[in-house]
Amino acid sequence: MAGAEVRAGRFSVRYGDEVISFSVRLQRERKPSKVAIHVEPDGRVIVDAPEGVGHEAVIAAVKKRSRWILDHAEAARLRTAHVRPREYVSGEAVHYLGRRYRLRVIVDAVATPACKLRGACLEVVVPEAASATVQQALDHWYRQRAREVLRDRMDSVAKGLRWVKASPPMRLQAMRVQWGSCSPTGRITLHPGLVKAPRECIDYVVLHELCHLASHDHSPRFYRLLDRHLPGWKGIKQRLDGMAEDVLRV
Image 1: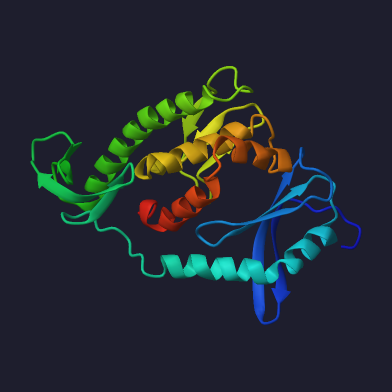
Image 2: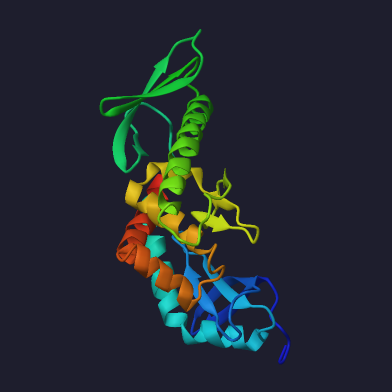
């Protein structure tokens, strides 16, 4: 494929005995020859490349950082190795705004499913104790809280940014490898599971996406904006990535 332009999709390269699989995302606004590589909290490798860049240039960039990619992917694997699926029974740990609560399931055959924070517990009232019923009630409650909390944080963070004239439209969507995204039209999508994370982590993700309104790719300008408005963002991102497997597991 020498000389061919890279296309979006999944590819792989070999590094010694290891195979690195990665996805390519094409970004029109990214500077020519500027390729960015990300290892997501779940270990997936994402390569952001400018439109028109050569396939071989992307392969070369991945090979050059192969050791770094494998180290970070292994760290992600180790973080998630101990995580088991939730059973949705009383006594399990759940999270809300960075705090840890104990799940308390109350069965009432005539009750409408409902959730309420009560002391150190997140109380769920359901007509039956089936895991699917408890999960559905919890998911509904988290989504309601996310709609209110994330909208409030979006409005608050946006007020301090001179390039944001009005708080942008927002939608909630569970995503496998992203906490948030910003469309070319300026609509921001956030993972509803963010409402389980500490407020500083929420604000980091919100600011990250709002910075994309000024610089839609991960250019030096984009990172300068992050540094200016949240100097400690790298530590916050690391904290958020470290809790992703527990906060977002189902």
